[in-house]
Length: 468
Image (tube, rainbow, N blue to C red; front, side, top):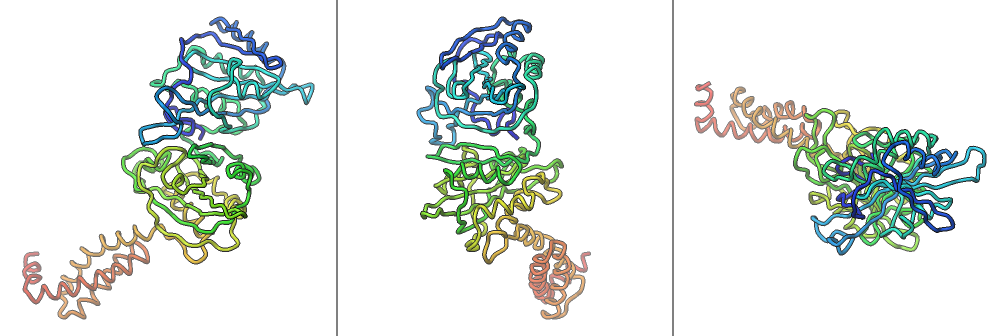
């Protein structure tokens, strides 16, 4: 999913990077040889339609991208959050590639964006003009592509959609969810060949690359080649890393919110099916030159995410640039098989269609299952059993009281008999929880059997039996 209306991949805070008075007229900026000419349309739809048609010409939309700019304001001295309260501030805007139906090399580029002053449309024969400039001036802060996809819709369709949705009349208001990220999300989902709608499963993989503590994000396509290429971009052009170690980490969750990241509680379509923690895999890798990289791979209710950094702290402490709302604790780790690389991992990922199965707690297709699949593929000696802790607990909780009652009713006459009776009853009851439950139930049952015999000797059990 690209973005939700209140949070998500597009943003931390919805502060506009530009202040001013809102206008229902659309600002259109045209570039010729790098020089910008700006006009402001009237507020009525006919005038807006006329100017947008002139800007688009007879071209058709062939590709759409959403780009992000990391910005600063007077309240933030650095884009990097120095504490949990400080947020990144992003400005999102759409870039369109327009192709002529008659001439293959005849292309235009257009940007659409929303800020506190209104809607701005920029048009140029050069992509760099609309990507790196706004109103003829250089954009603030570094920019990067968030997601991109093919499109085949005509510009007439975009103009009709724009006017139907009254984007120019919907003021920039954070409280109502009207901001640059929401606008970019709506336009992308209308034009993209494969929409990524918030709240629904997306097969694209979200790659977050940390450079100097600041995250850059990319979205892959659904195929292996594109995933490998985008991963290579995240690690400075290195497509293949040797994996040396693999670990599974857990973050205990609190609250009852729908999971988007590790900071919230997992939840399926059935509200009664909930998980108590969030699990993800961390891989220690190295380049041919010996430089270390850390990679996390994790699944939530909307998509699978991969984080890459030269610092392990970025991976363990943060998700998508924000601090995790809990401490990540290592559950299991092992050295990697000697032949495993990130290239082979991506091949395995695609062969198992891991990005194509929706998050479903009922079907046991969740973050823990993904962690197990990845860990078991990489690990040299160990396997990850995410059921083990829950099984032990369940075996004890179910087995203890049942064994106590069963052993009492059996009227054990000596410690050996009590232990055997208790072990049999405990194993039977604990077996409900699985193999580990059998072992735990048998052990607890044996101890309870001995205890019952001891209490029998003191007359306690006889009193309890006579009471019942």
